Length: 216
Length: 204
Image 1 (cartoon, rainbow over the protein chains, first blue to last red):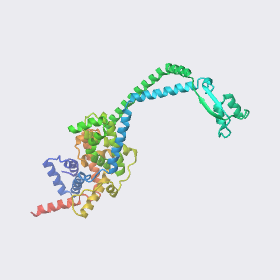
Image 2 (cartoon, each protein chain N blue to C red; image 1 turned 90 degrees about the vertical axis):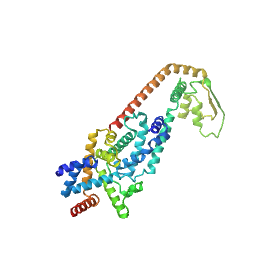
Image 3 (cartoon, chains in turn brown, purple; image 1 turned 45 degrees about the vertical axis):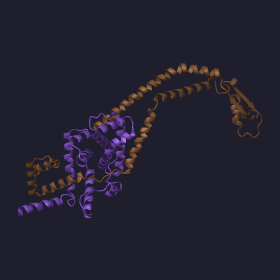
Image 4 (cartoon, rainbow over the protein chains, first blue to last red; image 1 turned 90 degrees about the horizontal axis):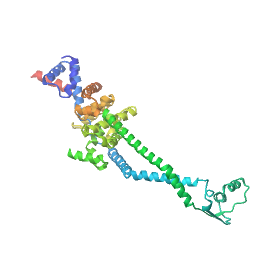
């Protein structure tokens, strides 16, 4: 046996795959070649040491507790997400609808109180110790008066004691019907599209994870 | 095995208690694999924790083509390789730091000198493992440190058995070439013992 053959057999010796004859030939060569004897000794030492290298390793508390906490956080989050997803979607849609109707009503013909003069009742009386007369003026007066006040041409503002706005119920119902007729089909369509997109993204993500874990 | 299947089913439905019981037997090996792959206790902890979360998230998609243990090691190796790619491999921490993090060098030999020797050898081994290319390192650690079968290492790394054998052979060659530079730690006593045996045989 030459040194090259000797070196090529070392890995099989490590795994205990050599036949008794092969092993004897290998050891005979080592007995006559100091360099190969040293190599054999290092390989055998390394094999024994590696097999016990991790005998004393214990996972640190930071790891043991850390992954448990992280998993529980995720599990709790997932449960919340999983819980009544339809209700969450419908609630979100309803909130968006109310916001839309509300803003449409408010901006129907301009800012309140101009938009619903019948629904606005302004009562003013003298109150000399009021802190922010300008702000109250803006709330209480029609827009041209506000402009005059800003330009300093208006009469000194009367402090406002009470401003109460009341929206016309009829106008609101009209807006609601109009918005529902125009927006609801689109909103339902958007919801369906979002659900399809979410399912597709989830599917792609699962495939990516599977491919990654399978290929590495 | 039945218990594992039951826990697996519950964990898949999002039960964290079942998941804890399912993976707890692999926790130590996962951390040890990460420690050898990353070469640094802090990075090992992060990589092993990342692996745990990956397992938790991917559990519904686990198809049981490999054993659960093999799949766990595959995900752990993958998490470590990703972490290694994200950063330049830093120099290994000293053994003192590893001891602080829960590592205690194992030694079957008695006495403080023998313990010191074992400690020095383990440190040298860890340095040698850390100096290996990542693909060789993963194969060597799974096979020669963790004691997995070639077939399981191949599944865990997603390569053929032939590739794994080739990688492990090259890893051992490189590691032993590195250890040859420390004859006071590796090989010397064994050579002396063998020389003594030969001399004894000749005398007889």
